Amino acid sequence: MTIRNFLIFLLIVLCAKAEADFAAGGEAYKKGDYETAAKEFLPLAEKGDHRAMYALGSMYSVGHGVPQDLNEAFKWFTKAASYGRPDAEYKLGLMYAQGLGVPQDYRKALNWYGRAAKKGYGQAQYKIGLMYSEGHGVTQDDIKAYAWLQTALSQGVEEAKEALVATAGKLTPEQLTEAQTLAQNYQDKYGKYQ
Image 1: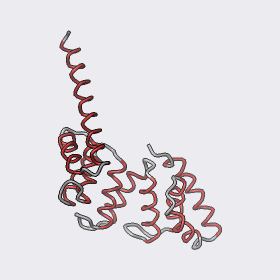
Image 2: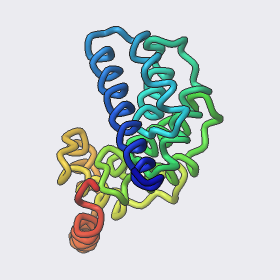
Image 3: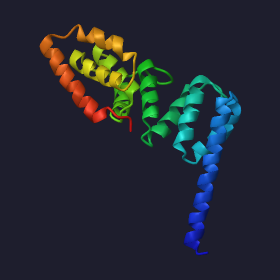
Image 4: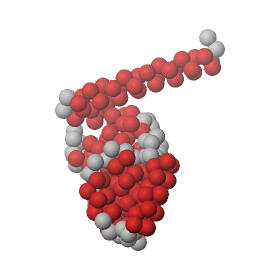
Protein backbone atom coordinates (compact mmCIF):
# COMPACT_ATOMS: atom_id res chain seq x y z
CA MET A 1 0.00 0.00 0.00
CA THR A 2 1.41 3.37 -0.98
CA ILE A 3 1.53 6.25 1.49
CA ARG A 4 -1.10 8.06 -0.56
CA ASN A 5 -3.48 5.09 -0.42
CA PHE A 6 -2.81 4.67 3.30
CA LEU A 7 -3.66 8.33 3.94
CA ILE A 8 -6.87 8.00 1.94
CA PHE A 9 -7.78 4.86 3.90
CA LEU A 10 -7.01 6.61 7.21
CA LEU A 11 -9.15 9.60 6.21
CA ILE A 12 -12.07 7.32 5.35
CA VAL A 13 -11.77 5.50 8.69
CA LEU A 14 -11.59 8.76 10.65
CA CYS A 15 -14.59 10.20 8.80
CA ALA A 16 -16.60 7.05 9.46
CA LYS A 17 -15.72 7.25 13.18
CA ALA A 18 -16.70 10.93 13.36
CA GLU A 19 -20.02 10.11 11.66
CA ALA A 20 -20.65 7.31 14.16
CA ASP A 21 -19.79 9.61 17.09
CA PHE A 22 -22.12 12.31 15.79
CA ALA A 23 -24.91 9.76 15.32
CA ALA A 24 -24.33 8.50 18.88
CA GLY A 25 -24.57 12.06 20.18
CA GLY A 26 -27.75 12.63 18.19
CA GLU A 27 -29.35 9.45 19.52
CA ALA A 28 -28.43 10.36 23.10
CA TYR A 29 -29.92 13.82 22.61
CA LYS A 30 -33.19 12.39 21.22
CA LYS A 31 -33.44 10.15 24.31
CA GLY A 32 -32.95 13.12 26.62
CA ASP A 33 -29.46 11.99 27.68
CA TYR A 34 -28.00 15.44 27.14
CA GLU A 35 -24.81 14.84 29.12
CA THR A 36 -23.83 11.92 26.88
CA ALA A 37 -24.74 13.94 23.80
CA ALA A 38 -22.50 16.80 24.95
CA LYS A 39 -19.63 14.36 25.60
CA GLU A 40 -20.00 12.99 22.07
CA PHE A 41 -20.32 16.39 20.41
CA LEU A 42 -17.51 18.26 22.18
CA PRO A 43 -14.50 16.39 20.72
CA LEU A 44 -16.09 16.50 17.27
CA ALA A 45 -16.72 20.24 17.53
CA GLU A 46 -13.16 20.82 18.70
CA LYS A 47 -11.95 18.96 15.59
CA GLY A 48 -14.04 21.18 13.30
CA ASP A 49 -17.36 19.35 12.85
CA HIS A 50 -19.82 22.19 12.19
CA ARG A 51 -22.80 19.96 13.00
CA ALA A 52 -21.41 19.32 16.48
CA MET A 53 -20.58 23.03 16.87
CA TYR A 54 -24.19 23.94 16.15
CA ALA A 55 -25.48 21.22 18.48
CA LEU A 56 -23.26 22.48 21.31
CA GLY A 57 -24.37 26.06 20.70
CA SER A 58 -27.98 24.92 21.00
CA MET A 59 -27.25 22.91 24.14
CA TYR A 60 -25.41 25.76 25.87
CA SER A 61 -28.17 28.21 24.96
CA VAL A 62 -30.74 26.23 26.99
CA GLY A 63 -28.56 24.25 29.42
CA HIS A 64 -29.09 20.76 28.03
CA GLY A 65 -26.30 18.50 29.33
CA VAL A 66 -24.11 21.49 30.06
CA PRO A 67 -24.57 24.56 32.24
CA GLN A 68 -26.57 27.23 30.45
CA ASP A 69 -23.95 29.65 29.17
CA LEU A 70 -24.87 32.16 26.50
CA ASN A 71 -21.22 33.09 25.95
CA GLU A 72 -20.43 29.46 25.09
CA ALA A 73 -23.54 29.26 22.92
CA PHE A 74 -22.41 32.38 21.06
CA LYS A 75 -18.92 30.93 20.62
CA TRP A 76 -20.17 27.66 19.13
CA PHE A 77 -22.80 29.31 16.94
CA THR A 78 -20.13 31.68 15.61
CA LYS A 79 -17.83 28.76 14.79
CA ALA A 80 -20.67 26.88 13.08
CA ALA A 81 -21.65 30.02 11.16
CA SER A 82 -18.10 30.31 9.84
CA TYR A 83 -18.94 27.18 7.82
CA GLY A 84 -21.91 29.01 6.29
CA ARG A 85 -24.61 27.25 8.31
CA PRO A 86 -27.80 29.33 7.98
CA ASP A 87 -29.27 27.86 11.18
CA ALA A 88 -26.25 29.10 13.15
CA GLU A 89 -26.39 32.48 11.40
CA TYR A 90 -30.06 32.73 12.36
CA LYS A 91 -29.29 31.90 16.00
CA LEU A 92 -26.63 34.63 16.08
CA GLY A 93 -29.22 37.02 14.69
CA LEU A 94 -31.60 36.05 17.49
CA MET A 95 -28.92 36.55 20.11
CA TYR A 96 -28.14 40.06 18.85
CA ALA A 97 -31.81 40.99 18.36
CA GLN A 98 -32.73 39.94 21.89
CA GLY A 99 -29.46 40.85 23.63
CA LEU A 100 -28.84 37.25 24.73
CA GLY A 101 -25.23 36.94 25.90
CA VAL A 102 -24.26 39.94 23.76
CA PRO A 103 -25.30 43.58 23.79
CA GLN A 104 -28.53 44.07 21.84
CA ASP A 105 -27.61 45.27 18.37
CA TYR A 106 -30.27 45.27 15.66
CA ARG A 107 -27.79 46.02 12.90
CA LYS A 108 -25.72 42.96 13.76
CA ALA A 109 -28.93 40.95 14.06
CA LEU A 110 -29.96 42.09 10.59
CA ASN A 111 -26.53 41.16 9.22
CA TRP A 112 -26.77 37.60 10.57
CA TYR A 113 -30.41 37.20 9.59
CA GLY A 114 -29.52 38.48 6.12
CA ARG A 115 -26.84 35.85 5.64
CA ALA A 116 -29.29 33.09 6.54
CA ALA A 117 -32.21 34.64 4.62
CA LYS A 118 -30.19 34.80 1.41
CA LYS A 119 -29.60 31.07 1.75
CA GLY A 120 -33.36 30.52 1.84
CA TYR A 121 -33.75 30.17 5.62
CA GLY A 122 -37.43 31.05 6.15
CA GLN A 123 -37.28 31.96 9.84
CA ALA A 124 -34.56 34.53 9.10
CA GLN A 125 -36.66 35.94 6.26
CA TYR A 126 -39.55 36.30 8.70
CA LYS A 127 -37.38 38.14 11.24
CA ILE A 128 -36.11 40.53 8.57
CA GLY A 129 -39.70 41.23 7.57
CA LEU A 130 -40.53 42.08 11.17
CA MET A 131 -37.47 44.32 11.44
CA TYR A 132 -38.55 46.30 8.37
CA SER A 133 -42.10 46.44 9.67
CA GLU A 134 -41.02 47.76 13.08
CA GLY A 135 -37.98 49.79 11.98
CA HIS A 136 -35.51 47.85 14.16
CA GLY A 137 -31.97 48.34 12.83
CA VAL A 138 -33.33 49.64 9.51
CA THR A 139 -35.50 52.45 8.27
CA GLN A 140 -39.10 51.29 8.58
CA ASP A 141 -40.23 50.12 5.13
CA ASP A 142 -43.57 48.35 4.64
CA ILE A 143 -42.77 47.37 1.05
CA LYS A 144 -39.62 45.50 2.07
CA ALA A 145 -41.41 44.14 5.14
CA TYR A 146 -44.15 42.74 2.92
CA ALA A 147 -41.64 41.23 0.48
CA TRP A 148 -39.66 39.45 3.20
CA LEU A 149 -42.77 38.28 5.04
CA GLN A 150 -44.27 36.92 1.80
CA THR A 151 -41.00 35.13 1.06
CA ALA A 152 -40.99 33.57 4.52
CA LEU A 153 -44.62 32.50 4.12
CA SER A 154 -43.79 30.88 0.78
CA GLN A 155 -41.18 28.85 2.69
CA GLY A 156 -43.84 27.57 5.06
CA VAL A 157 -43.29 30.00 7.95
CA GLU A 158 -46.94 30.26 8.96
CA GLU A 159 -46.41 32.85 11.69
CA ALA A 160 -45.53 35.33 8.92
CA LYS A 161 -49.16 35.33 7.76
CA GLU A 162 -50.54 37.64 10.46
CA ALA A 163 -47.75 40.20 10.05
CA LEU A 164 -48.12 39.99 6.26
CA VAL A 165 -51.86 40.76 6.41
CA ALA A 166 -51.22 43.69 8.79
CA THR A 167 -48.47 45.05 6.55
CA ALA A 168 -50.56 44.69 3.38
CA GLY A 169 -53.30 46.74 5.07
CA LYS A 170 -50.92 49.71 5.33
CA LEU A 171 -50.01 49.74 1.63
CA THR A 172 -51.68 51.66 -1.17
CA PRO A 173 -52.63 49.60 -4.25
CA GLU A 174 -49.52 50.88 -6.05
CA GLN A 175 -47.28 50.04 -3.09
CA LEU A 176 -48.85 46.59 -2.82
CA THR A 177 -48.06 45.92 -6.48
CA GLU A 178 -44.47 47.05 -5.89
CA ALA A 179 -44.22 44.89 -2.76
CA GLN A 180 -45.58 41.84 -4.59
CA THR A 181 -43.05 42.32 -7.39
CA LEU A 182 -40.23 42.61 -4.85
CA ALA A 183 -41.53 39.54 -3.01
CA GLN A 184 -41.45 37.54 -6.25
CA ASN A 185 -37.89 38.70 -6.84
CA TYR A 186 -36.87 37.60 -3.32
CA GLN A 187 -38.62 34.26 -3.76
CA ASP A 188 -36.81 33.67 -7.04
CA LYS A 189 -33.44 34.53 -5.46
CA TYR A 190 -33.85 33.31 -1.89
CA GLY A 191 -36.89 31.05 -1.92
CA LYS A 192 -35.13 27.71 -1.69
CA TYR A 193 -33.30 26.60 1.43
CA GLN A 194 -29.81 25.66 0.30
